[in-house]
Amino acid sequence: MESLRQCSQWIRGYVNDPRHQQTLMSVKFDWHQLCAAMDIVDDVDLALDAYLRNSFPADDGEKYLRIYGVLQALFVQQDALGHLVAIVRPSFSLVLSDVLKDIREIRNASIGHPTETKRKGQLSVHSMNRSTLDRDGFLLLSFDEKNGTLFENVRVSELIEMQRREAVRILTDVARQLRESDEAHKRQFRSISLRNAFANVTYAFEKISDDARRSSAPGMGGWAVEYLQSSLLEFETLLRDRGLDLETYDHIKYLYDEIRHPLRQLRTYLKGETSEIRSRETAIVFADALQGHFTELMGLAREIDEDYASADEDQLRAASDEMT
Image 1 (cartoon, rainbow, N blue to C red):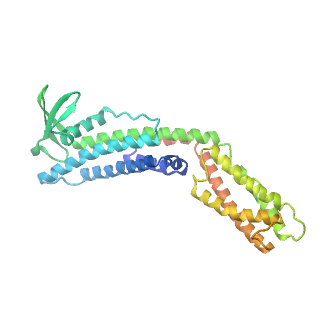
Image 2: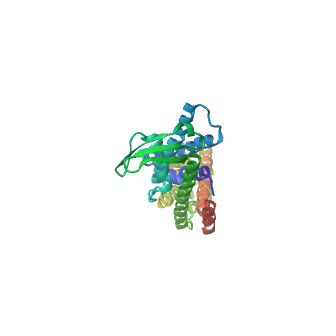
Image 3: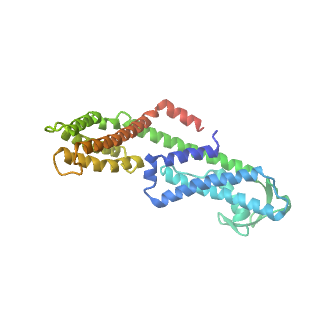
């Protein structure tokens, strides 16, 4: 079984993938809450490791601080898990298991509301027996009017392990659903290549280069710049069909910004209109720079196509098996 930290890392990778991050960031509060929740799940796990790994203090005050801290940490981590799941997978209904509910009740009774705990209309009071405090747990003394005085051995180290198992189970289920949803999306568009938008780009630049170097009547350069513009529009359309846009990938947005000006100037120059380009030599420089940007853009399109082609059914099943 994966560790809680490994499950958390997978969720982080999913969240930070540009295709998912843009959607998650569309509601600012939810995005910040998600980031805080992921951090808290990991931070609490670090704290729990320290509690289990380090020696337990001899001082009674320090003992209380350690146990107060670990029980509160477990409570906080449960809340963070709930918020994480609600944001990253809204359709997944997280219902706390009896194990997690029991941990919350122990926390409430021990350190949350020990002088007055109310459950199902029944009031009770609680206290930890100081002489029993150690790293593994403590004896909890309770009193309510129905049952009188009760004693419970609270095994803190066991609570930690039980919560970790439940957290791994929850995140594994969420990860499996996210993988399946991701695969269904990729399957829908796997046969539609983004690179097709740029099928004739190389030929178009050959014609632009021919026209930039000739001193006679223009040839196909005018068609070529129009084709380049239409290829950009087609690429945007293919992205939108997938629920993406230019803002999804920072470098694609950057390249579009870099392409606009030289493409506009080449269009006007090759049409014989007023342009910043005043010579054939300058036109060649503009064309070479533009071709470099298109080459980068086509490389990014190829990477996205490869990503969509990477997860077939066998890989999906193998990935899901790794999480169990």
